[in-house]
Length: 26
Image (cartoon, rainbow, N blue to C red; front, side):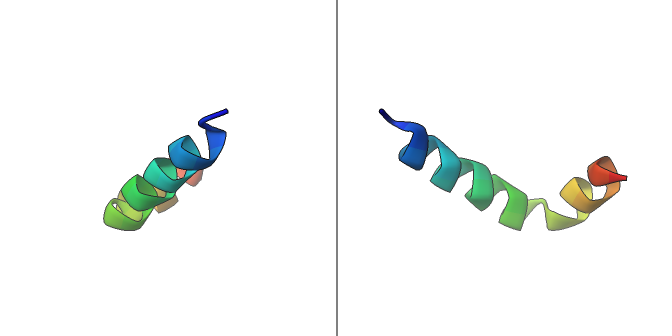
């Protein structure tokens, strides 16, 4: 499965848009 790769990309995006992610979380 490419879940691991998908997760890595997801985390990469989160790190890049940490502020956006934080706002989206709430």
